[in-house]
Length: 132
Image (cartoon, rainbow, N blue to C red; front, side, top):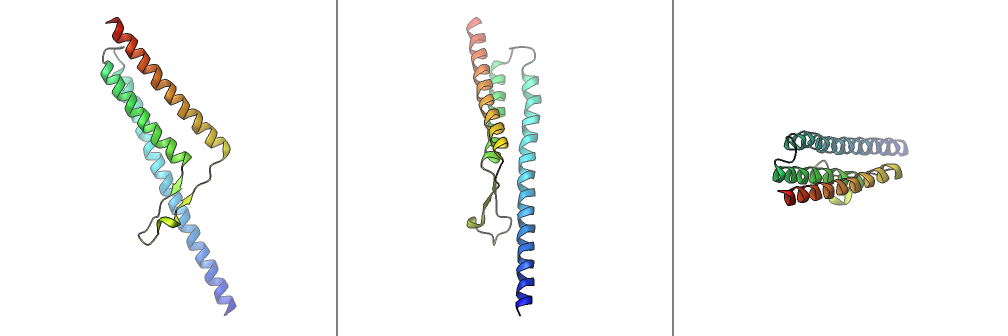
């Protein structure tokens, strides 16, 4: 009986690890999808910026879209939570993915840089509007 219990425990641990691995892959898929949106947005922003400083409203809108997309990624990394995969999983079963200090630091730097770039664009657009 003890041997059967040990085998059952091993099976349960394997199942739990498989579920965790699937949840991590799902999280990575969501992160990748969000990163693609940022990449697509860079193209849109670049197209809006040419010819230089012609479509100021468009530039501001695209910068806001990019900032929002970057914020989603930052939150996904800094608050990395594995969501339940199946209906029987409960919210209490959510698990946080621990990020290394280096990842957390770099994500924070990117967040700060995006805030600074957003401010610079807004300042440049405001200056361009004053010159018109």
